[in-house]
Length: 461
Image 1 (spheres, helix red, strand yellow):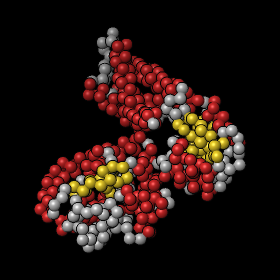
Image 2: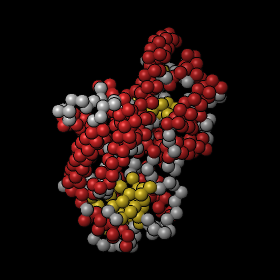
Image 3: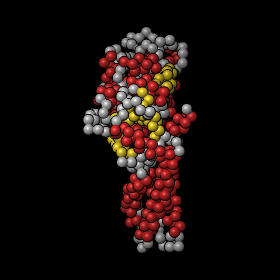
Image 4: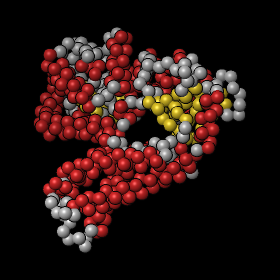
């Protein structure tokens, strides 16, 4: 269990450590260039303000080009190719912004020396990181547990790749197949669905020979359990999703259920938006709204100002969701939805619910990282337990953080769930949002939410 925890911590923090180290090496390259040319007094060096801008430019280039991503199966040459591309962009900006400012004859010497220092030092740093990761994985650390469903010629070739390339960091657990009975076969495909929860899987590889219906069943299962799926490609492959490829030496597999928010850069943009937005709301709205609403709640009925309820968040992790209390304290808040003219709702509570002000404390949940401004709305744990057994792909909505508002809400699916089609429509819209996320979609949903709050109050009670 501790190994799993360490693995997840490593994956979470490694990109940040890498970027910080990368920036430090860039700074060292500037100092090395200055040291090498210290005897040439006429050479102009960037001023501190200009130097700081260059460091920020390098940071932006590194993040935008995803230089922090070291593919498990990529070679060191690819790492150097990515570095070369980043350097071209960086040096082009340096040449445009800095060089024309200085007219001394040796500025070109400084530029060439800087370019050489950057390529040498960062090249050594990144290649070193690449090799260290490879060695670490070869010794059994930072590995991914994988199985292959369906045994065929392609599956056997992939197994050989795993056995030969321990540095890929993929621990092959065996096959699940209805026909094969080799030593590596762990059971039938039906056995897989029964045993999967005990395997702690990271990746499932699917043989191309399986029936499409079975492939879809496996993918849906993986979505519900947050497991990556890769398909060993074949000519009969027919899927509707956008696909990307991973390379294992000379062997290719297809990534099936990657989403935009798997990207560190996209998560950075979304989290930055959440923090800025929630801080603005806290400083300019909640700072006076909480005391005012709290006083009104206390004057009308006994009980706490806030209603704190456990709900399922990202990866089904339970968190405490905050709301202004809008009902008299009762034992059915978790299991009984609010209905029209619900006798449990107080007078001030009815106003809060009708204006959606009862949800405002959730900006605190956003700030601490339990929620996002935009995402699938979180349901109570009992509702979750019911819906996930009734609605296909329901659990996949927990692949990202829940939101204060979402695509389903601005499309009219908010409030009480009276009919099965309402929750099915919510899940479909949430799934579409997860698969097609962009920062522009978030902004659009926020603007549409404001419109809905002002114009459409039909289901708010």
